[in-house]
Image: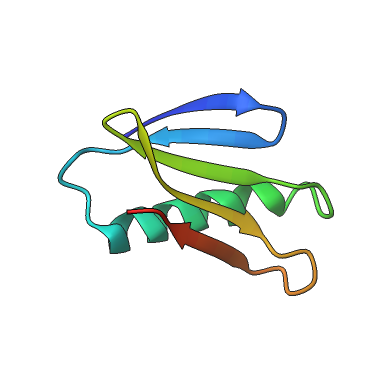
Length: 73
């Protein structure tokens, strides 16, 4: 996996073609939660890419403090 900053508060993550949806979800939820802890109230987002296509994204819900993830494919 490789990571890059997309823009302020957004991290892009390039995942291997063999990565399963469960592994992608677990990884991006851990990353977004870890990034959001030091910056409460700031919007933080992690987007996962595979073969240059977005496959998942997650944000921290400001009310619950929990990650919300959408798997695109």
